[in-house]
Length: 196
Image: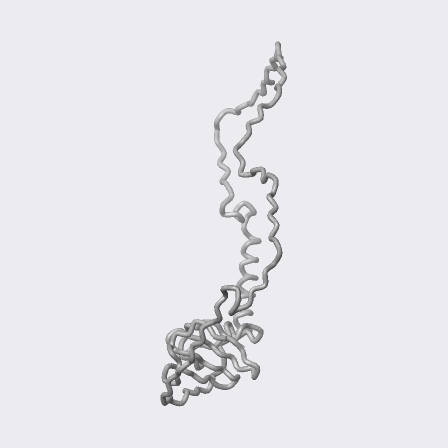
């Protein structure tokens, strides 16, 4: 209702303004128009004098001549004729023979130690920039990650995404929750640069 009253007031004021403009002389419509002031000075007459035409004499023409070619130093060098060296007959070498030693076998010895259970957090809805459903979904600390500093990620056969991080170990995302593995669960370091 208030909008209708505002529109009626605007319409009536513009109608009133138009009626006032009809009563004014046309000279005053443009406030930036120059003012015309009559003076009592004598009339000034402009006399046009045609320009004087002077013909040009003794025009001489000269040929430009042959242009001078300046050679620049270039980085293009002639390759020359390639030298062909035959590789010879291939030699088959087997480890343990023909001066090739067998690889040294080092037994792997490990340590056993008790580890804690990994921390499992329910993943919150992913962050979508500008609330655009066609945009990129991203996960950060607010959505369940331990850190925003991540390194390479891989996906296993089951569809889990493994995320390597800086100072937060490895996180596994299964579509519903994040499982975090650190040195408490047996990693040698919480800084994981790559995964295989």
